[in-house]
Structures are given as structure tokens and as C-alpha cells.
Length: 274
Image (tube, one colour):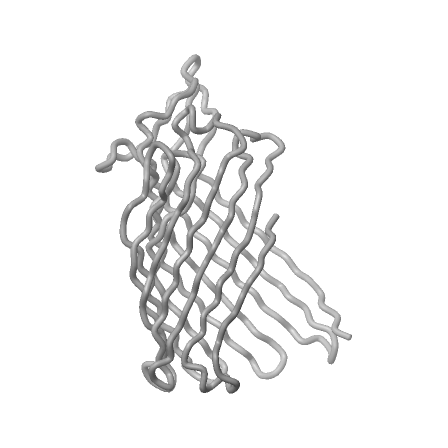
């Protein structure tokens, strides 16, 4: 559950002539689990984003965030799995048009996971993206991101993400959009994890023993105009994790949990406008 508040400041009455835009967002969220009560937590998120349009089609960007996450119990921390954290991110860069049909954005900065104990992320952040308007009805995008995410296992995961998307409009009756992303996740030091099971399928990294996954996400969505006020959406999504990670019981070597899986979803919906 999220509760969000946002403040926007942009001096100037005409949007095209506003050189500065500053937005501050604060939110409160809590996670409750029926069968995993040790992971119940609450988080305060703050974010400050600013832009300065120093050319008609080009702007400098500042993007910072500082979150405060606390678990309701110390069970995960006592087993060296996950601890309270205050992750901070700061990135600066530029966004704008390279040509009439091509736009680009590049940001770089630093991130700290600031966990109270255990593994901590302390490394660079980066984001690069290019968008192309191939025609009046075709849009293409490709990008790369380097960031980190919170994890119930070893505090965090270092994430390299490569993605792309396509949007195509056919006449006035149908829109088709497709997207695909591949993420490479490397988790923090797991050598000190305590429990009644052995953790296998680990790769070696500079911090000790780390889990490494490849996550694949894809989607295909088609929107049809069936009538003047009636439309239909048909889609497909893919979610897959490729990893050797698994948890094996010490007593009988039975597999308790495995990280690899593949999920497919087909869906359709009708929208009536009035």
C-alpha cells in the first residue's frame, strides 16, 4: 500500500518558456505477507527531480532519492539475510532531441544502499536511452540501466538492465506495442547467511559468495477500436528467471526452494467509454 504526496515548482506562466522545473515527492508504503511475516516492513520514500532547459530541445536533469526502510522484526537481520536500510541515489545528466526524429537521455551518478549490517551496495549508477520516431506511426526505443534493488536475500542485488520497445499504429483502429528487457542480477555477500539449509548454485565475486540470475521480461499488447465508444485489449506477457540458485535441506538434501522459473500470461479486456 502506498500513500503519495507531490509538490511541483515551475516558475513562469507559459510551459514552453519555463526553464526550471523542480518536483519533490514523498510517499509511505508498507508490505505485509501472510506466510512470510519476517519480511513485513515499512518504507518512507523521498525523491527530488529537477530540470533546466538551457536549449529549446535540451535540458539538464538532476534526479535524487533517499528512502528509509525498516523491518517489523529483526529475524532476517539475525540470519544475515536482510537488514534495515537507507538507500540513497543521485544522478545528473541531459535529455533532449538529437534530430527531429531521434531523442536521447544519459544520466550518471552514485548509489549507496546504507544497510545497517551485512552487504552494502556502494557503486556507480547509469542510464542511457535512445528513442527514434521511424515514421508518424512507428516509435522505437532502446536503453541500458545500472542500479540496485533491495532483496530479502543478502540485502541487495546489483542490476544491469538492457531493454527495448516498439510501438506501431495501424490506421485509426489498432495500436500494437511490444517490449523486452533482460536483467543481470548479482546479489551481495551470502557467505554469512544462517539457517537450516545449504545454499548452492552460487558464483564467486569479490565480496565472497554471490547469487547471480538472469531475468527476462517481455510483453505484446494490441488495442483495437471495435466501435466509437468500445475498445478491446489483447496481450501476452513473459517472465522468466534463469539461475542455478536453490536451497537444499541439510538433513536429506531435498530441494526446499529453486530460483529458476518461467511464467506466461494471456489476457484480454473490453473498455467502454461514456
